Image (cartoon, rainbow, N blue to C red):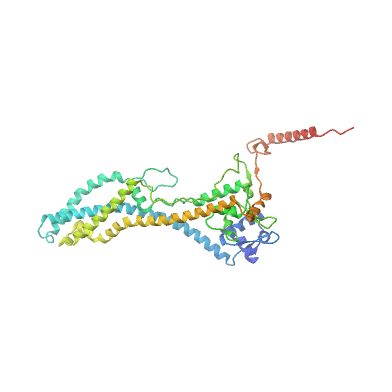
Length: 432
């Protein structure tokens, strides 16, 4: 926020309670620029708006203004870095769980076969452990390529899907990912949708609104200072105004001018509605298949653990020794493969309850506007003087960059002459 430093210095010299005129005079910056940047500072530092009995507006900034701005800057940078690192970490976790399921099943199957072969040969397992383990290892080596060759085409992975890409059917690994970790936040674009709805609604209200009209697009009730609306003023270059009865009105001059042929007062969604979380985009068959593989993996882990208790089995080498060394980890993984989706399902139920509550609150705030109370109705009536909508008509242009300047001047002179002629024709002649 280097560009805001002159304003910060001016605010500090003025005692942290300032008006736009105070800061403009102190800093020497343009009034329009100061007004916009003051709103940015107020939003970043959680300052409050104050309105006098004359309708003048002041900003009360906290005395630790620089610290708050520094904390906000670091918070934004750390949040961006954290989001990038989390995407990478989460992607790696999903891949490790998907491939880990197949690897775990393969290890258990090969190790159990090796143990069964060793037991079927009889004799002293402990003494013949080397030969048996080598035989088991050789058996696993001959069967592994064919097992991998049969499954590899099924495990093709095209990378993580993107929100803007067309939805397609999930392959095996993607279905496993979806079963374990879901398909991402359905409201990842919530802020973008929020701003789009707010901008469209303000335009439909001819660029002037009160706080209650923007409430259905927020996540919580507004406090008495209405400070939650400061980001809206910053984004759409809004200006707080005071009506004749002392009501605070927000006017957005940039949204009161349009060159579009569409009607600016078209129907707009009256409230922001969040999407509910879904458990998985995988098909029912894919989810059942993932559950079945998870159960098979858990059963194989239990069988292998039981075989380890037999005399002499723990002394076998080769693949049996490898799986025995990893057994605790593989057992935790087998349990976690089924536990993680179960816990996630419970989390989704609670998350959706919160989303439904917020959606109901926003809808109730929108319903109050349809049937406003007496006080709210009077407040809405105060908007009339501030509402306006100017349309740039292509037939009434005095200059356009795609036309010759001399032709435009000639056309303008002709239009002026025609207008005067019309006025003279409409003037009554004087009576003799």
